[in-house]
Each structure stands twice: as C-alpha cells, then as structure tokens.
Amino acid sequence: MINLSNELMRLSTYLEETEEVADQEFNHYAAQNAYRHRIEAAARMAQNIAITNVTLGNDWLAVASADTATAIDRKYAAFRSQIEDVQELERLQQTNATSQANVSIPIENRIAEIEQRMLARQDSIPKIPVRQVAQKAVIANQQIDEASDNRQSGYLTLSVVRDLFIATGSGTLQPHMTSVPSIHVELIKSPPEVDTKSLLIRPGTGTTYDFNITLKSTAFNVFVPKGDYRFRYEAVCSDGELDSVNNEASVSNSKEEAPN
Image (cartoon, rainbow, N blue to C red):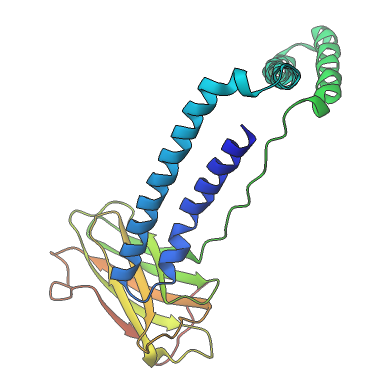
C-alpha cells in the first residue's frame, strides 16, 4: 500500500511538471509534442498502477501477516474516529457560536473533551505526506481600464520567474465580448538588460472571454530572461476601430510607466 501511494504521488508530480517541461521547448509545436508524449506516458503509468492495485487487492490477505493487518486496521480505525471527532467538533463550535450564554458552558466542556481526545490520538493516525507544489513559470497580473462587451483595454504584466524558451501568460475579458476580438498589445516595460528588438511577441485569442501573450527570443537557443514584462493591451470586436488589426504587437520606444 505504501508503494502504491508513492507511485500515485509520483504520477501526480509527473503530470504537474508537464507545463514546466513544455515551457522549456524551442517552439509551440515542440511544446505540444511534449504535452502529448507526457500524457501518453502518464496513461501507461496509471495502467500499471491499476494492475498493481488489483493484484494487491487479490493477494493482500496472503501477503500481509496477521500482526501487520491488525496494526493497519488499528491505525485506520483511529483515523476514522479522528474524522468523526472533527465533524462533531465543527458542529459543536457552530452551535456554541449561536447559543445563549447560559447554555454554552456544557457545549464548551464537550468541545474541550473532544479536543483532548483528538490530541491524544494524534500519534496513532496515519500521516498524510505533504506534496510541494511547483511554482508557476509565468505569473500574470492584470489591470483593467476599460471594459465593455465590444472594447476592452488595460495592462497585463507577465512576471517570468525563471529563464524560459517560451513564456506565455493569459488575461481575462470581462464582461464577455460579443464576438472574438482583435488584440493589440504594446510592450511598455521590460527588464533593463533585455534587448526588446530580439523578442518575438505574439498576442492571441480564440474566445470571447480571454486572451494570451507569448514571448520568445528570435535568436536560436536563447532564453527569455526572467523579470517583469508589462503590456498595454486593447481588445476590440469586429465593429470597433481595429477592424483591420489581427492580433498585433509592438514595443514602446519611450518605455512609458504604466500606473500601478
């Protein structure tokens, strides 16, 4: 059972790292292939875990000694009791919060009794491993200035936390627009050491409720440096003034400061 739990944790971590692996690829197609290959590999891992689980279920009584089975039963009985006490404690605390002062003392005594029992049982219950969640490679922060169903504008800051071949961040369109809009973005602030002329900026959207901005170096095998990239964006539906614009990007020469 311990090995099975470890395999499930390994599968979960493997899937969560897929986005980071795809971010390290050289182009969009390579990133898609990375996603596809890792999903196929995860499916095979899940199949192996399922087969192992069936085998364990069939052979458990024969494999586990009586002492081991008894110890496991005892631990999970304690675990079930702990859950029941947690539920009872929450119910009593809610009742105590809404009760009159003259009837709350018996409830407080009962709460104290349950808390002591839970504390005494703490070493007897199974320990649940804590999994570390990997930090996102790109963190997007959006500031909306104008918002209607046919024209929206504002600022989107992409904080690239580590060097990447491709850095992508998303923003929302609220309220949802009447049709898929055209997107114009302008890079107005970037890390001082970045040569903006070497950056390929690609805004895109295929929905009425969100858009994305992708950064990539035009030089072969060169990362997008970490740091904050701040964009001014404008989304306009087909009946707006950007009729001829189809998701274009530019870089501000003045590097104007956007409001915080």
